[in-house]
Image (cartoon, rainbow, N blue to C red; front, side):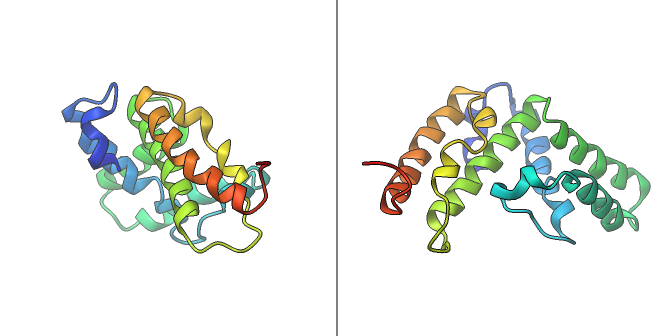
Length: 152
């Protein structure tokens, strides 16, 4: 998604696209050892960031120090979510999660309605992400209606 929409992301110039792509790859590395926590359960897991940071340090310990520091720095930047690049990647990550939920094979009791508010603060950050969110939310609403999670 970052590659597809790179030329439309506000505050991201061509020179920053490489950084965006690195953030896209690195932000999930901390989940490589212990796995990801489903979005619906993330608020209940307060040590998620610490565990992911520790796992990322473990994964990068054999790398040259400069590369290890770059990876850890980019991961921290994503976690803080304050730069335009990190904000964009956070928004894309939320949108991609919802798309997976809409298109994936989910349990019968899957909570589609949850996705209608999931990550809104990130996806409301720019006009592009708001526009994408509207399209994705339409599909989410269809699933939620079929599952009787929303009134007709």
